[in-house]
Length: 482
Length: 97
Image (cartoon, rainbow over all chains, first blue to last red; front, top):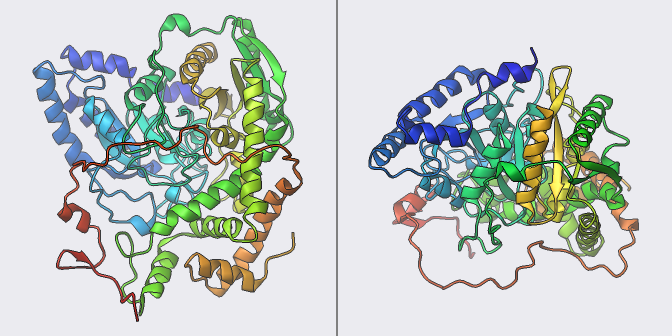
């Protein structure tokens, strides 16, 4: 029995089916929340969860059941979900898995959480991440490392490693995550679920702990593409609290089975992602997937985007620059960890930050400080933003020829805990996901197969604001691969 | 790229309001040098006739009404997270000498 078969048994029904059952009285929100909390408890050993939000979830379930009895049925009525712990959300502290935010009680909720709750969804827990999203394995969480659902010696990926593991372990039908450079897609690949990064600006960032403001996106981790599409349909849209939000597709994102096909689709296999540095086992799975897509009627051609080889270097200039700016707010004065013993204001800042941030936070803050400092700004930051334009232009040209681009999501399957001890080596695990982040285009990782019982993810990317098309093709691809 | 000097790492830390231990200074000298060495590959990329992209939405000067929106965050809730409070105000160390 493959790990997928084993885990599929613990899977939840499709979200639309859960809502159907709730609305026809076959199951209640209280029962659904109990099932989720039971699964969270049973799978405690994987350390995917920082804190359950049990009391609030049970109370909300009762309220949702009352509303259902009155005939008021939201589009996600009674559906339990788990949030990555970098969304401001009630029910437990919001920590971003960082010591500097330990004990932070959110005074309001993020827009994405509010929109999910307005449709009757119920948050049952807050999941682990690399602190502030700085990492690809959850090993940079200040609290603990989450274990891969398929092999406890291995990482689940990151930074949304907690949400990905939680979904694969069946703790909830979906989780809410953030993806700045691959943080939903890479753990989805390593843990074996769907991880989606929508077009930049499609979902409000209001109330989300900021990492890199020009690439931060919000999206779901789920068991099915249909589920991810429904969630994005609920949370997408302009928000007065985030001036970078864009208009949604007039057709919405809920998929019509008739449109989800591979016949006649033009798919580009990214040459740069299939060469050096790609594990041979991952390559085999992707090549097998390509054959299946061709058999299903898609036209697959190899596409070269030469500037992709520059994306990781550009990313690790731009993102640390924005991190150093965004994390300057943590000064120990208004909220967060504070060093009370400091003798003056500057020392209070310095000691609060030095004791509150971890090694990777400090590493990125210092790189960002360097690339933004006078004398280096043009050479690093401006140059990286100009290379970004080059990457965007290449994507634009390619999407005139193909509907989507595909390739592996990550160069390897889940690596062992402690294996990538060198920071640069860890950064290389993002090499296939950062380009879509810099370009702001939508991308999704879906399970493509396994190698030695570990999941391999397929990444699909589409042109900016072509999220609906991306999801249609991802759904059809998922059906061919299943 | 040459290994960053101890002095330069200390200067970066000071700019970023961080205090490093001796071990951290030596570790970051190696790690930051390695990372900056990697990103240095961008220096030789030809970007003639290209302008930088600072944001990808194409939106500019997005306006909204300047009005108070009540999103439920009252004073007590906001002050709950403040490390030091006195008379409903945030207390900090002396700012002016």
